[in-house]
Image 1 (spheres, rainbow, N blue to C red):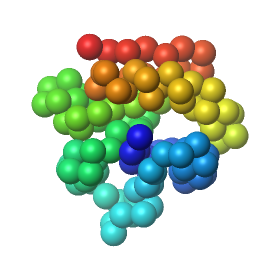
Image 2: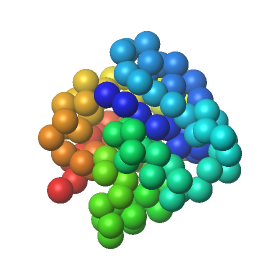
Image 3: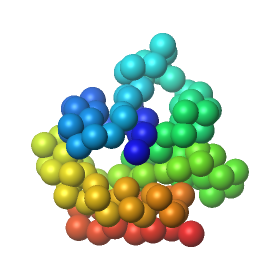
Length: 117
């Protein structure tokens, strides 16, 4: 699966996801780095068929109102260490990938995975 990790999430997440065989970029890899606007992030993700991985509710609003980005993974863990975040993401990753193969919006918490219609 192809992912685009948003600025609020650690760059280390890219390495963890890449090691599991996924194609992953972080906003730091984009020309404007973490200053890249949500609109540009969405456009890149949609053009490259990437799932936007974010904690930002603005992407949720855009998805619900306009269906952009086309695919969204919302991380709803609250404050969490980078190490614990990577552990949670890797724990649920196989389920996330399965869910995103047939759904467009998935939300991951510390102990839950929700598929939104």
